[in-house]
Image 1 (cartoon, helix red, strand yellow):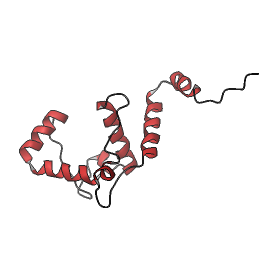
Image 2 (tube, one colour):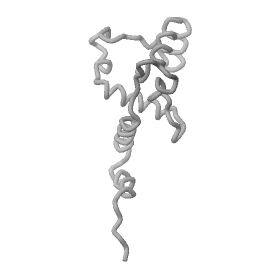
Image 3 (cartoon, rainbow, N blue to C red):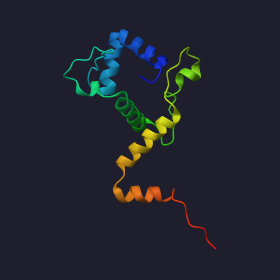
Image 4 (cartoon, rainbow, N blue to C red):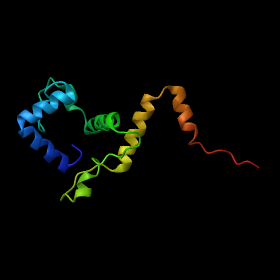
Length: 125
């Protein structure tokens, strides 16, 4: 979870079981079970992924619903709202993951083309 504030809100929603069930059906097409740290059944492989992989999936999910260029407030929400002992993800770490995701999604030729703008051009005389 990227922030204490989001974690608290999520747990509050889970406790309202009827609303949570309706939300899950609308958002995911099925009920999404919650497994706190250490409580995930062994037969759910993705739940045992590294924190980096889970963060990567969260960034991918955000990119699927956000408008192009729309900043995500989740990464530094705790700092924004003044949560004591904030969680958060450094903007440069999010940018690294976004760059890697973009590179994975581009065909090889497009990757070269996209990167060409970052090469130093020779001085013209």
